[in-house]
Length: 247
Image (cartoon, rainbow, N blue to C red):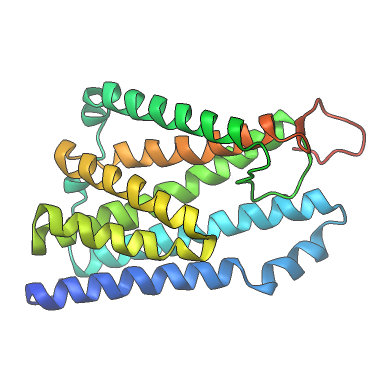
């Protein structure tokens, strides 16, 4: 049975933009609800363990509401093929130089930013002592979340806007929405989202693959957390210690 919606271009892009915002706010309010806090209290006693649990559940919620559900609805009602998003080993291999260059620039900027402002902290796990197991757990949480996040914003939203509006208008719409949802985290992140979003959208459309912004965003989040621990005098990496969470 064919469930594909036969909508005009205006109706289609309106549904997509509304849907992206709806699913983002559903994710945001569920992930930051008191439910996860109460759930963590019932499962763990240590503060760090509770924080690890909340972090992972938030990232898993993001994977479901930003990636899994929108992706399923997109396949059923709009387009059953993901070919246009460039999920292929061939495109990954051909774009390795671009990915490595962009990743190196991101790491360098983060290094300078955290080095000059060691009190800055992007961590979402409340812990002062970090084992490498905890950090890997943190990185994996970011990865599953950001794959879904980029699929929604630089995948569905960007490509549908590109089909309706063209190259630069699609980037403009995407960056405005992307920056606006970062305003809750402060002016600095909103401005950073303008820069990052523009670069991510540009390379997504010109190189024909969503893999570039995925690797960019993972690099940004993981290394931001790494330098937050490395340079902040109140935080440190440690070996597994007694009474340390088992991660």
